[in-house]
Amino acid sequence: MNPRSYTMAVLALSVTLVVGCASMTEEQCRTANWLALGQADARNGEMPDFGAARVQNCREKGVVGNLDEWRQGWERGRREVCTPGNASAWAQRERDYTPGFCPPELEPAFMSIYAPARERYKFEKRIRDLEAQLSDRSRQLSDVIRQMGRPENQTAQKQAQLAASRSALEHEMRGLRDRIRTESLLRIVR
Image 1 (cartoon, rainbow, N blue to C red):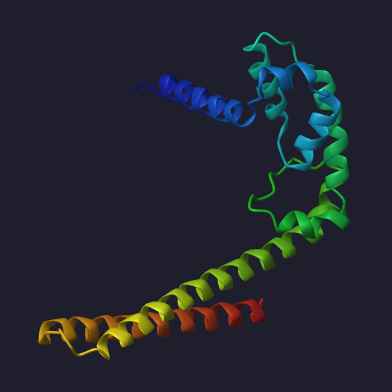
Image 2 (cartoon, helix red, strand yellow; image 1 turned 180 degrees about the vertical axis):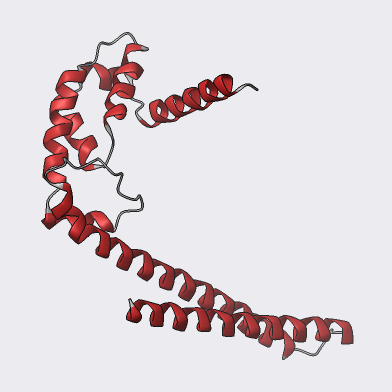
C-alpha cells in the first residue's frame, strides 16, 4: 500500500470510529438541542471533530444538524470544564487530557492542578490493580492448599502439580508485594 493510500485508510477508519461514537438515532437528531449537546460533549472531553461527526451522522439519516450551535455549546462547556476547581475530578477519568482541549488562557492553571492529580490517580490505580491481582492469587492459593489437604483420590503426580502451583503462586505473590512496595516508595520519592 502506498503512503497516500495508507493515510486515506487511516483517516477513513478514524472518521468511522468518531462517527460511531457520535451516533444518534433519527429521533435524537430531529429533537436535538445542539447547543446543550455541544456543551455536554465538551463536559465529556470530546474535541471539535466530534460535533462534525454528529452532524454527519444526522445528515446520513436525512436530518440537518446545527454545527454552529454545537460549537457554541462546546465552547461554553469546555470553559466550564477547564477551571482549576474541575482539574482534580477531570484527572480521575479513564481518558487522558487531550492537549489543546482547554482554551490557551485557561490551560496553564488547569494543567497545574490536573497534571499532579493525574499522576496520583494513575499511581493509585496501579496499586489497586496490583492489590486486585494479589487478592486473586491469594484466592487461587487458598484453593490449591484446600485441594492439597484432600489426599483422597490424589495421585503423587496430582500432589506434585498442586505443590508446583502453590510454589508458583507464592512466588508471584511475593513479586506483586514487591511491586506494590516499589511503586509506593517511588511515589514517596517523587
